[in-house]
Image (cartoon, rainbow, N blue to C red; front, side, top):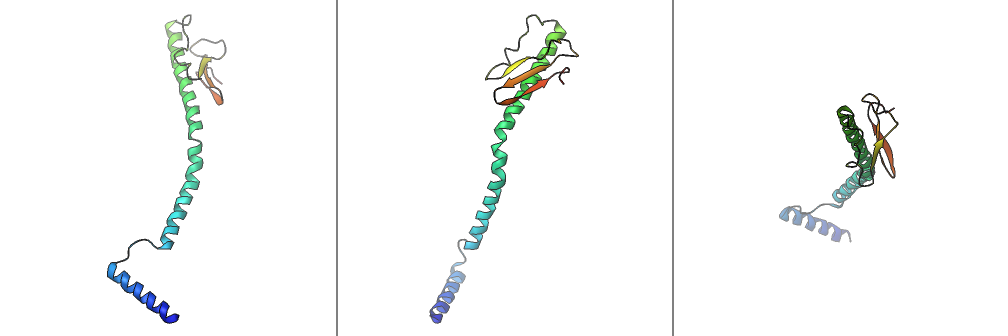
Amino acid sequence: MRTFIKNYLEAEKARREENGEAGFSLIELIVVVVILGVLAAVAIPIFMNLQGDAEVNALKTSAANGATQASSAIAQGELATFTFANLSKDGVTVAWVGADRTLDGFCVSAAKTGVATQQSGPGCS
């Protein structure tokens, strides 16, 4: 049996020297699988929260756009006809917060079901 194993190993060694080493060893493949597993374990939690972060940032943007439009309406004296209709869509509601409609005290909020309400404007606390 020893002779057989010794002859087999020598034959394999000669074959490798003749043909060059082709392919990957089992150890190399295991290392690659372990590295991919670690990367997946780190990346999956990051990607899971991307949609939630995007929804919050979209609401912040809607509130900031509402504050910009509100300040323009206040400055131009168009409060009687002003609405947030162009921002209130796709489940997002943009509205005034409180009764102060002055440039120094107004506050605008953006809300969507399942996402924390965001506010923007100089009068927001």
